[in-house]
Image (cartoon, rainbow, N blue to C red):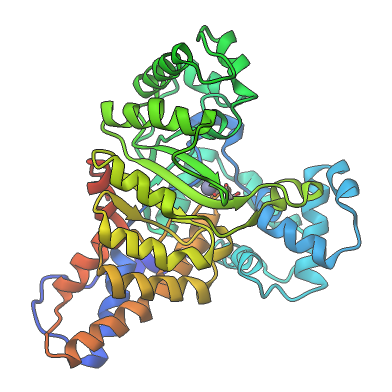
Length: 434
Ligand code: RAT
Ligand code: ZN
């Protein structure tokens, strides 16, 4: 089994010498390789969560990023695809995207990188060898291996207490694994209020579908109950490109009167992922969401009117990135993070990261993986390190040219901030890196 480059570095960090232009790139690569990441947004779960934690070749191949590409190359209709088993879906995707076509896209190359990391064939005509390998792994040991290979110490989950598969896990007091940190996800409450309110009534909360005064205090009680049970490190919601604040809608009222005060009460940041256009093609299900440019004046209002709230913000539209940096320069309760979903391609990550360094120095969180399948951590963090290295090295070379020396210690301190401590400070909690 081949270990990721993360494990290969054992260079000392003690030498305080100034680096010459050509030494900088190596020093940056070493710092990136040795620093374990805190992955601040994923859809991954520890073994104790059972089947909601996805891993293995069939899950990797049926990732919705790959499904979207599959429907471009295949004549199979979505209806026929959804009718067959996951194994058959994975086989169809392997044959179409990896055998009949060259896997050049970001998501397909990711599968290749994972297979290579485990020493599995990358050109096999079928999935038998890969399936046999994953079938032999135990969830616990496999999680340990993947985290080690990916150079990730901590993954932050997405935890929805109204998810019928997830709620029972929390209700039976699942044993916590400190490498997996909880996040209270609010999409059902803030974006689908017409659906979950009846579910909340059945759990003993006196809510209605209008966001009345009683309803607001009951939602606060619900949030308090779940903050105590889950101990989340932040609350989170994914919002459409049409998001507006303030708004006299259940979403606007619940955000203002329940969510923001609860975040203040429990001293939790609120994560806003803004810009998804849900279900532009419902036939392809999870793969059917798209992107739209959002009006970030709503974010300005939130940051300005609620200086005691802290916001972690990722925007999906490339066109919103520059504004996000500008707002981060105006409001120090705003932390930009990640290059999300359709932005998570080297060319765009490079552009956004350069822009952020030029406008914010090291005061941002460059990336999260958004992994849905455990082994994706390996390729997504490999790609992040690979893309960050020349960008950081280029910035240091410019600094040297402009007259300031750079040492390994400077570089290590900056990389620590970018991959770990900016996030740890934002949530007010440090995680073990061992
Ligand atoms: O990137 C994704 O996988 C999306 O489907 C979403 O899950 C997004 O990351 C989100 O958390 O809303
Ligand atoms: Zn996500």
